[in-house]
Image (cartoon, rainbow over the protein chains, first blue to last red):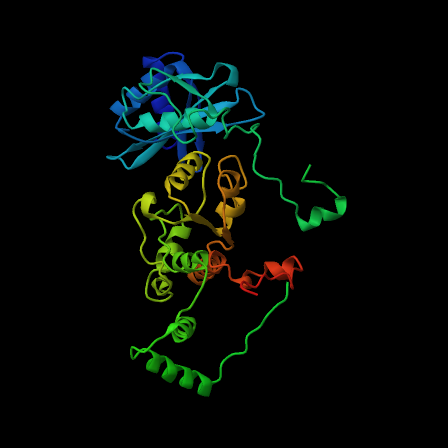
Length: 169
Length: 203
């Protein structure tokens, strides 16, 4: 049951079984989170599954621009028995955005990792079918990254009319 | 060209013509009387006008919903607005049988080729209505994912709203109907200051 103390106990146990895995722990507003090194993600999730966190509720990507390393992947785990949740976070840089896939262990991660790849460009090594899932196959770029242009049509708002901006050019 | 206006026949004259026509049908029609009979009992029009009248009153929309606007689109066939009154009620499940494509909702750039393909599969003549803000101008989704319908296919009528009420879509449908039937109430003569250029056939 990870309250702040339980989280530290979990982290210590994980450090003992997997050295160089836990980078940091975070306990914020009643929610426990483990920051791990990207290469240790599969071992970490396997360890937590044995601790009762047998349900991978969500995998999602983040962009921490302008911090480095920019991209993040978060795994939300749920323990059905203890009714408790824990988040596992990792960070990768944009120029080497590679994380080992957890799909072999958690089939539910298949589509969610594809979505993270589609939107943020994180490549999951070992994923059985890493394709874009939401955007067209020939789409270029990763639209949820913070430095991606918003796109769309320029709109001339009434407040901008006096400035004389020309949107038709 | 001189514009000729024919006086509308009064009630009494109409009745007497009716009686005359009845008489003429008793079998004693000679050439002049036959000619008279044909003139008085046959309504002439152009084939185009007759076809447009029929087309405008028997539109089959494609069964094709995109997003939340589709809910409003469904309700125009229900009892309250009941588009069946104007011959629109038969939503066809295949574009091959449909005349009208109602773009009811947002079109993502991944969906756009699909929509275009459905439009291409429809047989001529075909029309389309862009329903709601998203399919007309991307609405609140002014970003990388959504594309306005005009970018990839011709649109005849835009119905604004988010979503438009069923009555608004109904209004758009009726505007399209009058457009098909070339009703001057579309107002283009007013917009282009084009009064007095009407062509009167047979003058």
